[in-house]
Length: 247
Image (cartoon, rainbow, N blue to C red; front, side, top):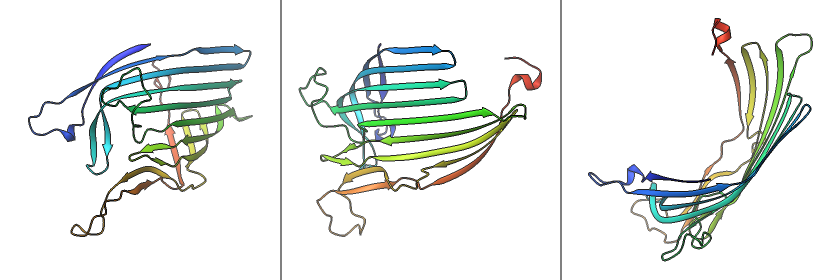
């Protein structure tokens, strides 16, 4: 599959009465899909590779505090996904993606997608795994209980000046029960209370004093990931049947 579209630049970077430059995006993606059902077992698998070229890309600049144009860029990568459903009560889903993004050097070609500097902040590997178990409660009609757990992995991310951000992992479990149109659940995010840097930057800065001597050496800056959080949710599920109608 191939496609093309256009994207405008960051509005914050435009001056009064300045015409907005547009970027043209050309992309292609292809891959096989496998689906099969064996009795109560459902199997699905997908694989794909992709290529994207942007004529006028933008990247966040920490010193300017906004996205800045960086010229043409190329992105390539692939994705694998699998899903297993058992008897309608167990659902397992996993996916992994690999991406490489490079700024196209002056005089470079679209056919050389891995030439040039790496696009900052673009994770090389992304992975996600989810498992959901749901079953009706014996002896109580229309009552079911469920549990779920998700694991996310964000791989190393290139930073300006040939630096790399560290990878991190997050574990997110939840449990709940559903009775007719009421759903009660409790969930945790970052259940292991892991300390990680959700966003990292590498640039020259001065937080001591506006008049102080400014170092010419770049330093690492980061935004910490959120600590363990727990939430309790009550959900009311509405559908047309409850009001005697139809969809």
